[in-house]
Length: 289
Image (cartoon, rainbow, N blue to C red; front, side, top):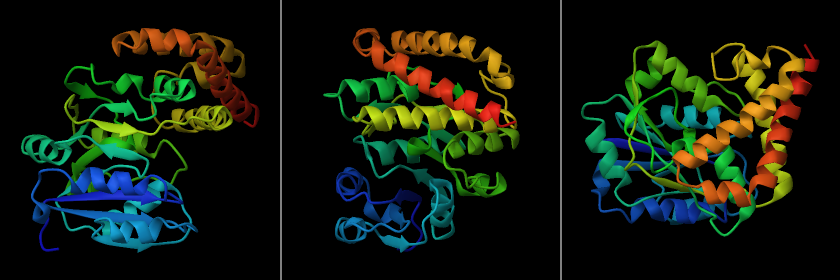
């Protein structure tokens, strides 16, 4: 494809059950095909992910070694032709108009992100997963300058991405680090309420809890380099009980702002378990230092 405006970059790993819907959500949009390209970076899938990607609209399918999402996205950027980079995950679907909004917004802005909706609304565990991770990026959040946006709905200009050093090769939180690097380079990240994607939040309790524990572990590692709401609290194991209370209170506040208070109430047991797992990850990481 010659001179596309937008390069949509999708990291994948054993995504045969979700990648087709992700790709169709992009190719079905009323946006000129010549103006965008879809690049799938597959890090060693052993299922039908590559085959499905090639047959459902991906312009480039790049097969690489097993790695974390940050590295896969960086490889996608190296193989991209667009001046605008749009990152979405294989378990996400772009809402109608996603590409058109990106083009419109990047006329005057350098980096944007938008709401992440729960793509598994039938599951209480998925709602807990959503409330723990994405409720701060709800469809009711007003247009504003934000500290970071999630990597599943993260858009910026390629020149700014390169100057920021790209994604770090972390297992998680690479989106937060990129946002901080962009910010240090004077790039404002704008939250755009219309720029929606649906994320297939976790429906299995054990996977939800394991992810929260991992997020807690990485919050300590990232907190040593970048300031966050938890930076001062995660300096000592003995502050972990305060973090637990702070975490639940913060999720309640986000749920109210996202107009999901009822969802918060019915999933509160899972949120408590998730907050405990997050704090467990913090405690373990602090214990090793």
